[in-house]
Image (cartoon, rainbow, N blue to C red; front, side, top):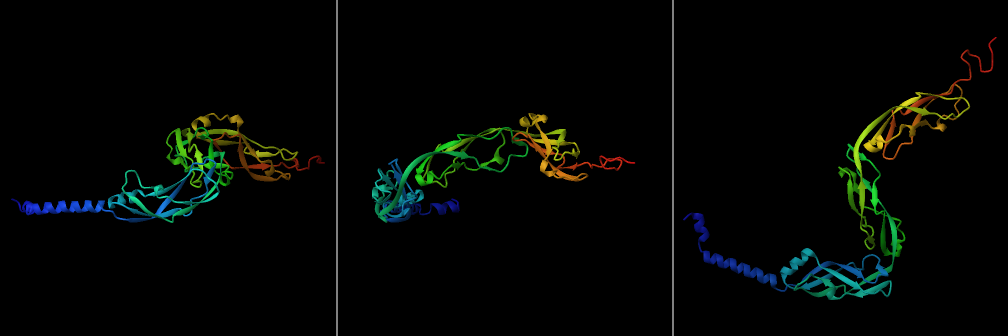
Length: 327
């Protein structure tokens, strides 16, 4: 017989007996009553009276529990964590002190644990009249679409309003609620996306519905060049102004559908009248261009940002002032 096998089987009866004894002792310890203290057990208040709601957590928000029962169940409870649920059927006063009952401690079904003590034995709860209100939702965007994609239509949000209910002081201060930030960089195709309402700052306010559908329509991003768009110059004086160049190239960028749909006749490249106001005869200025009539979701960039505007001199080409004759 090999040496290793012989060592394993040597005194096997004693070894088996020791293993069985160990299992028996472990089971005995697991089932032996063993009091234990849980120091920070959360207290949760459930208000059945729909005319009222709580204002903030109870005071104190946690209590200390002393429990008795098998050690094994203590370990399982420690992993899940006990809690204390305070049921309020009706509210008689905005400020109430409630004595905690042992049967309000939630230990799970079928447990053999018992509540020996709750400390402190009472909590103070503040209530406020509950009111409903309808508020607007708004979307917070993060990141940007992948470089090859662009929005083909405005982002749609459904529903645009939600119903909130909570303490009057909080609800009446609301005019809108944000959705959780939506990351555009993770979008690779058109679709509907469910985004939760961000209620992190309103733990005691109920919101219905708790999410909204964000609809995105994206397409391939393209460029379209308009080779010669006239520069519009509204005269700031009685003397006509001259602009150079008289037409510029404009590049349109965006999703394919809205870019192709742009009618060049609706675009206007111009110089702001205030930038050429008060020009003296013979004066020349370099002024910026602006593009108007660009549809939503389309960007329009002129080939050059500046043009030259000149006010002709009132002196004739022969050198004599206008209205004079040479001898």
